[in-house]
Length: 321
Image 1: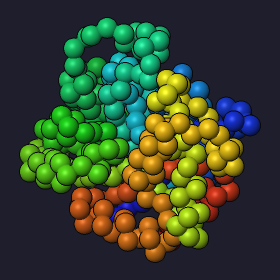
Image 2: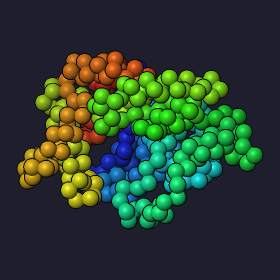
Image 3: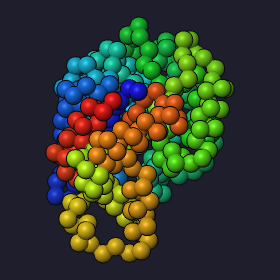
Image 4: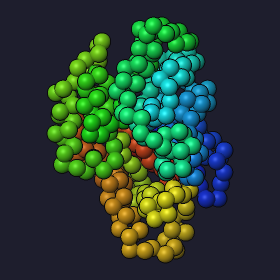
């Protein structure tokens, strides 16, 4: 499998948003140095625990500090943008960093109702995702009657962040998919991926391609790795209680906090979905995942409070695959 990282520019309780962005760039530089194939960033709007909502801008900064690693979005939320504008942004990236740019596309409308209102997506407009994909690809391929610039003579590969119907759309349009979240532990996963591969309609020279995205943390032993996974699991559980996704907290502060039963259950659920352990334990779990999914690529969407431990985890993970 190819091996890549997804970094959400997570903030930390004792630091600033600019520091989170610098940490993302530093992590990308480190990922290139240790041999990762791709480095992806995400789009989240007005989320207190995430510093960046503009993948194209952050990718430009990362591209300027790296030279080889592929750069991608995991992903741009297409319903929030005009396809022509997305095409122009990523063609600029392709012109600046030729042959290194990927465009991952999702369909989320925003984290909360106020955010959706701010994004002008608080009302039903109908599902135009598939039509927008087709329009966007025409701009990128130079086949539209409107020419998107800069014209580079190269297209930008598109990927669909997909579950359920998204897999059907990707198959019909000949696009690779990125799958993650609860579906990875579902018994429906293998049949869904088989359906995607079976229904795939090639576009140009494309073939079905599956990237699996999940939290992966590697440490010297299982207990340490599980502790490193705790800050993200805690933040997710707290967000379900408060409606606000918080910055990452130190493990010691989390252990000292009050743990209502519902929060405890949700933390345990999140930890059970993560791949966190010693090198041998993580290798075994990833081999099982590869056998079950036939994945072509692993996208490790990992974060933890301790930045040094995060880079060490990235380094150990790279050594496994």
